[in-house]
Length: 444
Ligand code: PFF
Image (cartoon, rainbow, N blue to C red; front, side):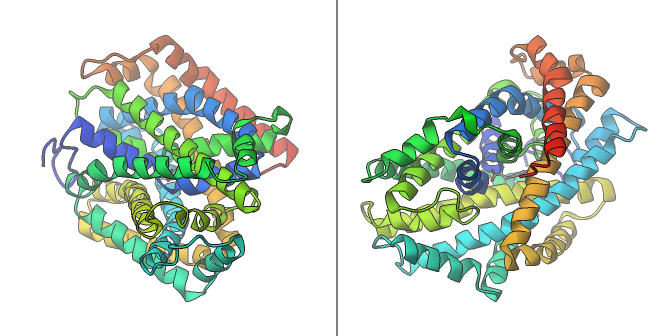
């Protein structure tokens, strides 16, 4: 394995391999499933504006911070803090990240299981003709609410994830991501074009793109901030872990910005598909976690070769979800491999099994899933990201981080501004949103 750092860790064979694998982690159900329904629940375009501001002003700087911690320490999140701040309590922040990763994987794999169910349906030809809104809702209930079926689909998805992680970083993750993400992008563009030309779609486009700023409240801020961290895989050490596999000679800034850009473009594309389609079909944009699943079946039948199109789309969504679940599992497994000396194989199977047990309640109850998604997907990631800023800004130090980022020949752009954001702006803004949420009791 090229770029190997000894033991069972492995590394990326090339910089482009890293970009695609990190983009693979970032791009997933967070973009296609969670972004549209969260935007729908929080007023549409007003949410989108806040989301974009959060990504640019807070998340991209945090992404640099995580990659720097990872490459400087070459460790999993717990070991990374321990090696950069020996003898302190900072490794507990890494520990929080590992736990968060585990908990996110437990609900994420349930939704990923639904996508497997839809792929099965696509293969059976269910989407060859456009489904009415009522038929789509009924189908969703049959896949998501059918007792044992979602549990089995979750187990299937976790099994796929474990098989990739067991193989190690380069062999498993890199190869898959390299070819398939660009294909996914092309399909999404085609679907967005079709959605925007549906009769009655204009209202959906306006809902998604024309902000009504009076809709902004604390809940919109919290939702957008949490979603931005979730979508970029930040706040729990996934990017610390991937940074640890990036080699010293690689130029980091361009890689980080490409990942953030690709992730944001895919989320916006998903919105451009979902909202025009749901308004055209007369559905409710506030439908919640089922939104994407009930909206999409009405569009495939209106695309050329809809039958094949649906198969291709759900296959690629499964793969996009897989490159994300792989990164979630990888964080937890790399902790056990590095810190506890477990063999990769053993760590992979034990963690996967434990995760399945935690996933069962989410597979059986939409409420439990929703609650887990908010607690871990929004709050734990946001708090984790705030602590990462405090760590880099006040403990490890901006100069050391800037030097690490610039290793490999491309210096950190706007380094003084970045330092200001990491030390002051990001942690104060995040703390402000959290305090405001607690004070107003508006938790979602
Ligand atoms: N970013 C992934 C997505 O948008 O689907 C989800 C995710 C992966 C979140 C890895 C956090 C993480 F560490």
